[in-house]
Length: 366
Ligand code: TLP
Picture (cartoon, rainbow, N blue to C red):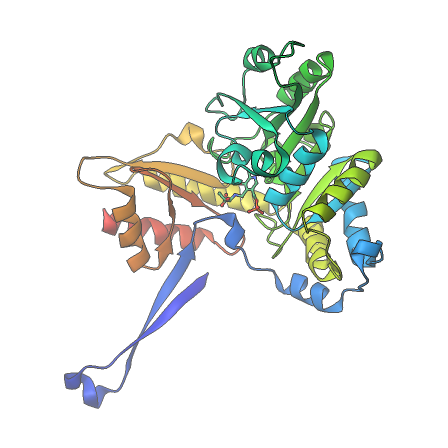
């Protein structure tokens, strides 16, 4: 629970009664990126042993990279500043200029990463439709792979996203990951996974995270979303791939020096914050079930999988922006993602009580 502000109000007829103080409770559901580091993280950051990571001499970064690689079952790992940089550096390492990456038309990399792979890498994004459960159809991938012909860009890479942000936070299952990887091998392609919320997927499916990573060539996961670290994502892959991507990261200006202050929080994130994601998922379902009972709002509970809740306002007169404005006035923040569509994300720091408070505010606002 958090408190947004103190409203200090003194009006003339209240002169003799002193100052009235109103406390407004703040619940920020815009994203799990808004999480603040735990006390344990802050302490670990303050105590972290440091060195120059561009020389490979920061012991805390090295430790985080070892722990991360081990955790996802890959040979090596590399700390980067963000999920966007993780995907960009990975895809730039897989593909050369003029080569093609196949990716879902709702993928974060296609929609929200500034077109970086094209802008900085000359990589041609070939989009195919995402299904509502975050998958792309195997037959659509197969049809998108270019034959060897001088007219076409060369297909090099297939990108997947797990959980899938725009597709309701849906987790992709191990069997699906395996099927895509098998198709990729058959065509001599690599697979990159945007696993910004990979641990949410593993927790929701009740599987070891390695079941979701063993089939892909590279992956990124974020420390700074549900795992609540202040900064950082990790790229994982083979030793050879990570050695290359380390060069790409440097070219992008992403070589960091005493980055152990960040890695220290990342280690706590990996060791202490994974199991509690279940709580965020339960709170997301609690929120969704409450929303289903509010007149004028519409939600499909079958589309609530992890920490992300999408719902719609119905009726001609209400818009998502208007409802969000009314919630803001009550200290509650959500994101408008379409004229009628709203996204709310539960995370560390948001309690079941905050969810109930949010539901009361939603009812009032409607
Ligand atoms: N997603 C953010 C926004 O950019 C939309 C959010 O609030 O959900 N992959 C996926 C699947 C993501 O959801 C995000 C962030 C990223 C990559 C990028 O991570 P950062 O923000 O660290 O660059």
